[in-house]
Image (tube, rainbow, N blue to C red; front, top):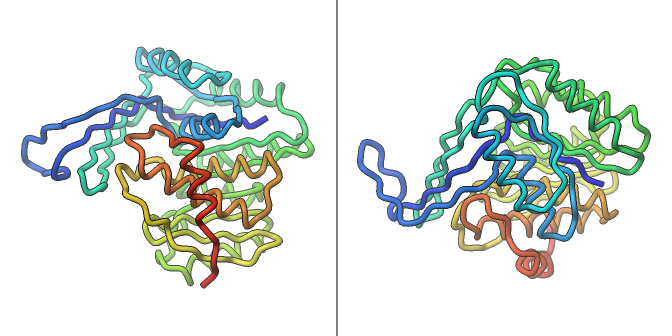
Length: 307
């Protein structure tokens, strides 16, 4: 089973405007949608359309937390939720122009509460067994300690055979990497390196040498780099698709890593699937997941070639 952990989830409001966001002006939307959001939730949504179930693990609070829980029912996956003692689950606003460029305005959400995070961790520990995959992704609540994800990784790795995938930034990524999760999916910006193939290939290879089994570095429209213990760092360009909204493409890639972990896919096929998922996600509106048919169409037409 796959468990996705989102400590700071959101209600995502996606607005579409004709000419892109015009600061200082009245911007009229011509379409809008509301989705349950947060990086781990996005991963679960993508896994669901791929036919792979997961358990959605979230921390919520306030009226918007209740609203989010109600929205999560539409995914059809099991949900484990804990409640922060104060605050309100955040709202994220995504404004997309017809050129496909998206501007994100993310709310803050609740303050970190140690007891709440411990409660969620202990519930998950009581359920996981050897062979399960745990995805930890997104930014934790305000005030979280820098080792919050590192501590979760340590705890989950004590269960033999459990694989942890980390998608985080800043100190949460740096300290999490030190615990050698099974896989990571950072961006070049999160790694503080140039957004080019050579820099990403060097960094991905180094991360694998430090004990991570699989490393996928997403580079937006430039493409991505994948490295693993049985595949040297390889770069490929992003797929040529019409982008409607780029939000969620990285989460789709993380879903690809989790799907590949659960189903035993080879490194090359894992990379191909991640690229197909990102391309298909870019074609959708908001953080709505793509269809499996479109993902497989892109998967079958997306050879991985090194540069």
